[in-house]
Amino acid sequence: MEQQAQTIADSPPPIAEPPINPAQAFREVMGCLPTAVALVTGLDDGDNPVGIVVGSLTSISLEPALVGFFIGTGSNTWPQIERSGRFAASVVASSMAQGLAHFVANRDDRFAQIPLDTSPGGLPIPREAAAWIECAVEGTHRIGDHDLIVGRPLALAGRADSIPLVFHSRQFKIVSAAG
Ligand SMILES: Cc1cc2nc3c(=O)[nH]c(=O)nc-3n(C[C@H](O)[C@H](O)[C@H](O)COP(=O)(O)O)c2cc1C
Image 1 (spheres, rainbow, N blue to C red):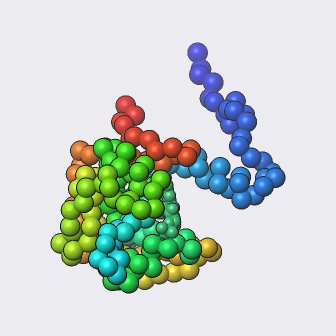
Image 2: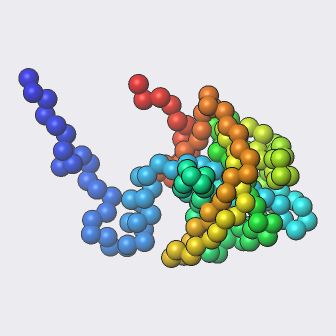
Image 3: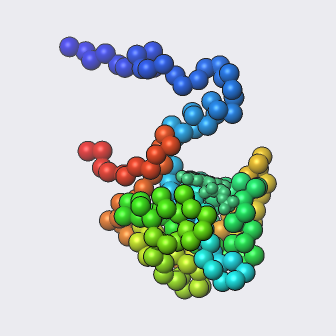
């Protein structure tokens, strides 16, 4: 028997159509998109580690190699990292879930539960990161209320067998094989 294709009409009602509160609808709909969980790190002017969780880390170009992420123009931490012209971006591993929850919930002593190593260029990188990339800031581009930060990799390493965290529907989740 021919299997009936599931159409969009069979699925649960959509989150929002036409939006009553456009900003809220935009947030909720975009929350359906799973994103990476990365930690952008650097040193403040007292050489203390500082960091920002970003969901927007992405590969931009292969030749030349370029990565990027979007940072809100109101970020307090990014200007501290940017001063040196370099940053590290690390892919957060599932083993870091508790440490990351502490990082997100606390403004002080954020790295208390995230053990750090040092990149070749002297930037803090989480010891348990699934991957890390140390970058020089290649450029910044204002787009709406965010800046696109473009980075040129200087050093990088990753573990192919690591299990990364993702962010989806306001929750941190663990990636596993579909098959
Ligand atoms: C899962 C997740 C993803 C996030 N992604 C971004 C992002 O891509 N860009 C951004 O500016 N802030 C992002 N944020 C918010 C920042 O982590 C941070 O709270 C915000 O930039 C303000 O911090 P700051 O003032 O210390 O810079 C994200 C937060 C979470 C929990």
